[in-house]
Length: 454
Image (cartoon, rainbow, N blue to C red; front, top):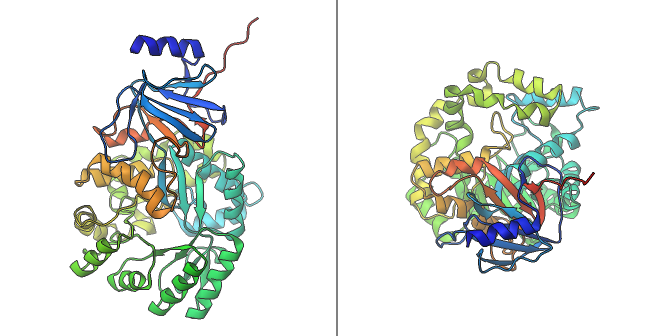
């Protein structure tokens, strides 16, 4: 079987993977051959597998000696790697890059808008996400036109994840972020009217932020559902979660990640019975902070300089000089106290768990936030397979509403990644992404160009 594969790859002249390639390649046929395959379904991995893609769809999956690879296919050697569905992050902030201080960051952007318009920041974030194996995401908070524009640029082929976007969020606690990121709700009717404005503009989802009244939730959810749009709610305390839940909010974001004890048994049971997803976003303070204290070198990623460019790179590095004193982490002691108990309520309670990260927030980088979020769940009792399914199939179907995404099987959209190692033994290998194919296009791991004959 292995000798047949060697002949196949030689015949296709695709022995070498350019693992750091950034430019997208869109061959008509792509085959990933040789590695272990996790399909995104509750089933055992398939070893020495092959995945055949034509156009933007998967057309065949199986043992590599049973999948016929066309002679004109571009073959990606995934030997000693694990193939799995493209990862999905259901809480993304592409307007942010991990800078340590919000007010300082937004002032810097305003002072440097000629060289760093928001479109450039969004493009940087998009590239970081796709190269990290995040092939789809839900962006929850950005100026309306800019986030709609980057969604369209990605649709047209710019490197980046497939996006659902909310545009500005609705809140009664306007703070920190510029006015273009949020709408100050004055009444339930005003909330409903703003939902209509966003829907008319073309957003995919609505984000309800903090401070909203029970009546606000009912009004905005009713209006959003009339327009066929899901609502995500940024909520922490039990009363707000109950109000959002009773109003019919579709996805409960941040629940249990703000230094609060676990919710009441009644609320947990109601959420579990409803099947509505929770997105706990647990890593970004309670675990990120001590990990960074223990290993501040994680802030010194050499790729940042190339990705961000100067002077943004130097500005971000300077924002971390006194990392422990950053305002963002001043409640981290409280969050750490309740973190494990709060997380366990979702692992053990039977709720539908969606993997989302709140990435872009201080030191919570696009390039590693999702695998770190998944690792926290695994370290606290979730099986690696369940974490992967939650970050792929569950996120695709239960959050994004896309049933043709999130698994590797014939007929599905061709989002497949390959990582160096076995994530079922060590979930952190999801941070070592060698191959990224999204919609049938190779964004990372493309074969090295053949040398020209002299």
